[in-house]
Length: 199
Image (cartoon, rainbow, N blue to C red; front, side, top):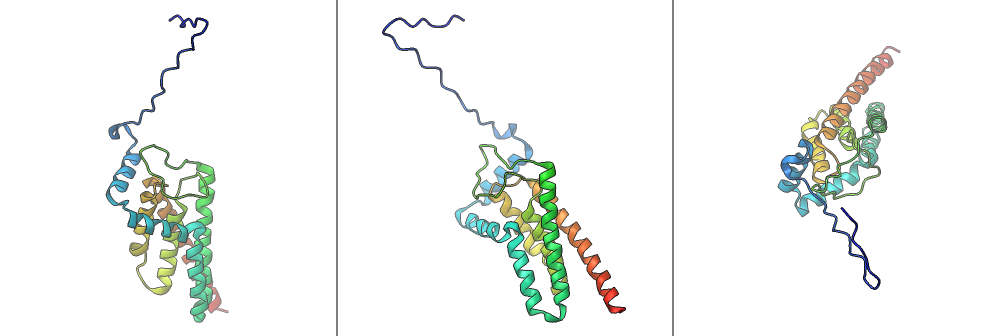
């Protein structure tokens, strides 16, 4: 097609507008559609406010580490166990960061997903919040003899979807990783206790 001729005194015609096409829900990836459904169902202002608070609490596992240190200070008879549990939570968090840097999956960026909180990095897989929360639930729950996993893991996992910063597979794999690291930490703590008892 020939280019339009611009005569003296005339202005060059403006280029045609660029259209941004947002795909229909049926054309989006399944995990994006799941995020859309979660946000449409539960991302009300009160829920988002709570989710943001949970995000701040779990950032870098700081809240869970602090709670474990409080347990060590209060439960002096089992201080060694509490400190071991804290180390297990820290190890779980470190493992999630290591996997993130290898996989390098980006956080949700589909225009249909609302991102409702800031994050320290753009890496998504796995969810470090889900990893450290699950590890804390397993390890601290064992020390307290309370079933903390069904109480605190699902809300934290859901909060990451509500805020639009993780895909469902991020939180599922994060929880599995946290449980695995916590299981290893509990086995190590038991062996250490047996060795200490034989001295």
